[in-house]
Image (cartoon, rainbow, N blue to C red; front, side, top):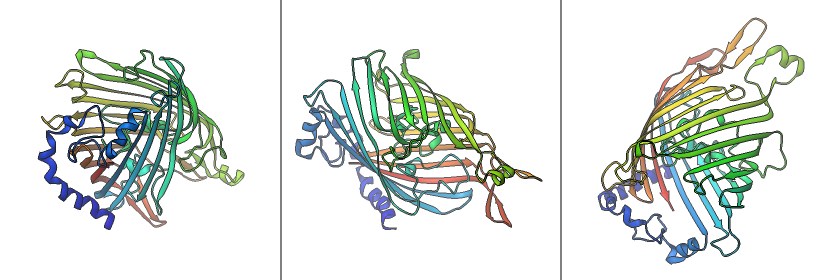
Length: 438
C-alpha cells in the first residue's frame, strides 16, 4: 500500500509543473544533454555537478528509470482485483573510441529488477496486458533482480560489425509508435513486439553480425544472430544450453510522400525440442512424458509511417503503424497475429514530449487439444485486444500515462475446481503508469 501511494502523491505534487514545463522541453536538449534547471533537464538527478556530461563526452553513459503501474480488471475477465507493480532499469554504455582506446567498440551492461504483481493472469487473454511486469522475470511472490544484457559489439568497418555476449532481445521488432517494455508507449505486449517471435528468450547467450548498408543505423540496419534457445535473465546461461535459434532481421527508413517511415522484416528458426501444445493421454501413459514438438519457426513484419509532420526531418506528428506475424503454432499457440493503430508524438504545441496511441490486435490461435479415449478437449480460442493511452510528460523526466484496454479472452473457461467452470467474458482493464527517468 505504501508503494502504491507513491503514484498518487507524486501526481498531486507534480501536476502543478504541467504548464511551467511545457515550453521548456526544447531548452533541455543541448550540447550538455544532462544539464538544465530542475524542471527542464532530461533526467531527475541532472548532470551530477558536470561529471555526467564529462563522462558522456568520453563515451561512458549511465541511464536509469523507475516505472510503476497500478492496473485493474474493472469488468469481465477472471478476477476484478487491482494490482500494483514496478520495474527499475539501469543501463551503462561504453564507447571505446570516445574513451581514447580503439575505434568501433561498444560495451553494454544492463541491470534490471521488478517487484509485486500484475493483472496479466486475470484478463483471460494470452497476450499480457502489462509488458512492464514481465522483465527481467514475470513477477509473482518475490522480487526479481537480474542482468539481462552484458554484450560487446565491435565494428570492423563503417558497414559491418560483430556482437557477442548475453543479449537482451526486446530491442528487436522496433517500431516508432509501438515498441518497448511497456514503460513509455503501449502497455500491452501485443503492441510492443510480435507474439509469434516469443520463442526467443528475453535474455540469452548469442553472437552475430550487424550490417549498416548506408553507414547510418537510423537509415538501414541488418542483423543475423545465433542464440541459445534456453537462456534466462537470472542465469549466465552456460549450464543449460539445449538448441539454437537462428534469427535475422532488417529495418529500413523510408520517405514516402516526403514523410518519415520504416519497414521491418524478420524471421527465426529454432531446432530445440519443445513441449507440444497438443497431447494424447495414451502417449503420456505409455511414455510417462509429454509429447515433444521438434523445432519451430516464425516470421514477422511491421511498419510505421507519419501522415503529418509539423517539422521536416523531426519525428513528431501523427502516423500509422501495423504488424503481421505467422508461425507454425507450436509451441507458441499464436499462429497468426495482426495489429494496427495510430500513434502521435508532440501533437499539442509546446508539448513536444507527449505521446499517445490507439491500437487493435487480433491473434489467431492454433487451439491446443487434449485427446483421451472417449473425448477431445480444446482450451483456447482466437483473442483480440484494444488499447488507448496518453503519455503526459509533466517534465522530461516525469511521465504519467492513463491507459484503457478491452481484451477478448483467448481462454474459454476458468476452472475453479472439477465442478466449477466459469465462462470468461470480455475484460475491461484500466491502468495508470508513472515513470521517473533518473
